[in-house]
Image 1 (cartoon, rainbow, N blue to C red):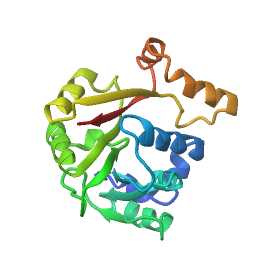
Image 2: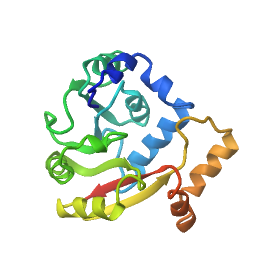
Image 3: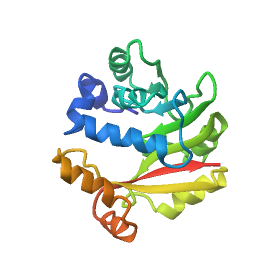
Image 4: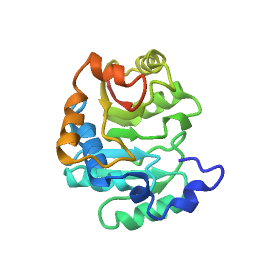
Length: 208
């Protein structure tokens, strides 16, 4: 995260709990799709989470048997993530525009932060250098033209791209049956894409 006005520094303590109405449901579903959308991630595979905030997603990924490394540009968020993930995963201070992990990773994720990439195509190129299986990120189709983003991915070698609408709401906690229905509706094809004209985002899994 880039913190020009200090908002992330001020909100670092309890960021995850404040950001999501149902932390478990939201992040568990996100972790599920990171593991299964596109090339599957086997237990033990390492996920690099750029702009990780306070590391809430790390808990959900570690619970699935994946290894995790978080990166954030805000020192206060890094401190909060290290406290949350102590003994579970490393967290580094770094900007998604120039961070390079110590070794290659199976997957790289970027959530609620792709707009911080100063040069989107250059960002995809750099990530492809150290990512072995896939890049996974969320994309608001009302903010970016989907075709433009897909063209940038393909230009940098990500030939295989899978899209999945993500219908678990961030700010509303759904009863169990409604939550299950929302996840099922994500796979409804044209109807799901129609909803994206008004709300929600895609998850994009791009691989070579």
